[in-house]
Amino acid sequence: MGRRWLEHPATFVKWLIFAGVSGLLCGGVASAFYHAFSAVTNLRHANPWLLWLLPLGGLAIVLLYRACSMEGDRGTNFVLAAVRENKPLRLRTAPLVFVSTVITHLVGGSSGREGAILQIGGSISSTVGRWMRLDDKDSRIITMCGMSAAFSALFGTPLTAAMFAMEVTSVGVLYYAAIVPCILSSIVGLWVAQQFQVPPTAFTLEGIPNLSPFTLLQVIGMGILFALLSIFFCRLMHAAPRLYDKYLPNHLVRAAVGGALVIGLTYLVWLWNPGTYDYNGAGEALIHAAISGQARPEAFFFKMLFTTITLGAGFKGGEIVPVFFTGATFGCTVAPLLGLHSSFGAGLGMVCVFCGVTNCPITSLLLSLELFAGDSLGMFTGQSLCLFAVCVAVSYMLSGYYGLYSEQKIVYSKLRPEFIDKKANEDPS
Image (cartoon, rainbow, N blue to C red):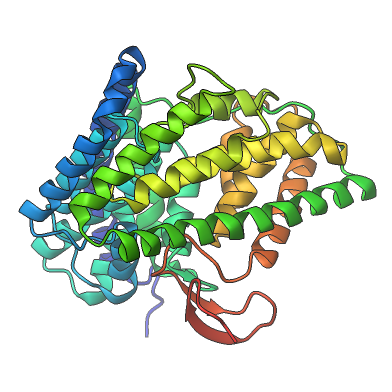
């Protein structure tokens, strides 16, 4: 029997092609999404009166989903179910969530971008898989390709995007079969975004300490606080829809009331910070401010409150940018209390609260590398990465079995090498 120089060359070539197609399509749509998102955000900043249209925006989103027979849409959870169980994703999901997220940000709802882009990328690539008559297993992989490409194009973090698609669905299990197609589609998506002038998300940290026993203790303390904050964020995010279901079961009424509540909260904030709209939209300006060492101590709580009211009412978008906001402003505030630089604390908070709410430690570590190493290579060293790794690990372990996504499966225990197979937010015992 002759020596085989390559195993499964046909499969390799197949995924080279499919990953390239997925990267081109999803990268292009993600680029269009970025520019639409930026345009409506700038328009809202120039016309603050658009905030008064929040109830009408909520009604429009509900009616749009109802007209497309998708009123029961569960957002990113459907994408996770598609990866794990090959449940079908409709192509109409992409334009629906695209338009609905743009409406949400035009009128000042508090949400992010990544939840929308994961749904867009997943639905497009899943549809391509059906057109190509892929089998059950390959359909799951191409859905992950779309998630990777779209996430990478929008945020400019290709390694994070590829790993997130492989890690988020089942905690404790990595879909290694998807590693080549996910990485390739992620890089192609990034390249497409660069052609359309989509800037990467990057920050420069200050005050990164040297590695020492005392610094380790400080970072562990931060990790404990981030884990507690992650649990609180997840519980708040899941409590809001239950309260809306109980008291406002009609989706139209819920959307209108939710919009009115966000308006009321916005003007309530004006009582001690007149003229601010910091908690409407994604709030990226305050993330940058926190990384530079400036954050109001109440900012993290208000962002959580605005986001849970907005998304619970039926507005569309994502949770991850609000998580970045919450983690950065909280970390900036508490880091000096533990003797750390506020900028470094903000960076830790962004990554570690993300880890706590998504249960994705490897993704979080790659995220710290891609977010913070780009403009500060002289400061962000291997020792710096070690500090992030410790804080990420502590946040992951102590945040328990909570998560933003109810369809996320906790396959293995965080405390012992044992199989538990529970959904996030369920009692693992």
